[in-house]
Image (cartoon, rainbow, N blue to C red; front, top):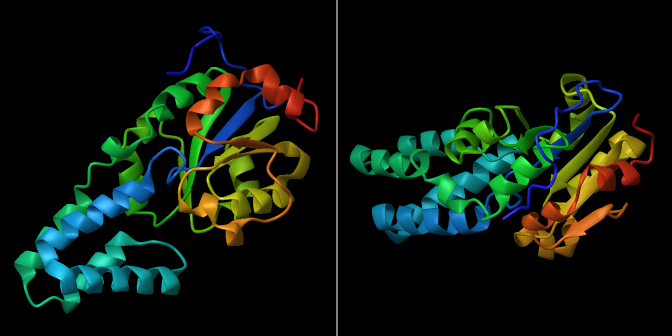
Length: 241
């Protein structure tokens, strides 16, 4: 559990004093690797070997074509190619009713509450604009961040837009993909502190590493509980009032 040592102080709302925390979801707040593994097993129970294999082939096909994961499009193509409408509907229920709240890392909600005492907190996630917001809401994360949820195909390419929506003096981006953080650093530079949480399969794959190195490296999301507002202010490479 995060120790709440920040009290119930009123948050600064002036962009010259406000910190803004930008959290990724998959493998940062939510164990997406385990979720997908269990989802695959549930689909296998419904579809069998060949049906499950076909589903994930379509999933990868869609991701390659659209440059983003899209369960709705995958399900549409699966439904079009499946001769058994009842089986296709069962597969759709597995995906659309998946209990994502069961896959939150144990300290994720406590961490969100902890940093919300320091400034604005938002989720900024890659994904399709239909399923991904529902997934985030289903997991309880949308409510946890006051429904400040932004979805992009490639979030690091939209950070200037994010800063317009969520003005602040300094930004803290928390992600499991080191390469995403490196790209974000190139966009926001001194306005950004990057926090790499080494969870999930991307964190162990060197091909996803990129310079510059992250400012903060954590083994688990719960380690953010050790940080307070002054820690992030001291890391800000440009001044906050």
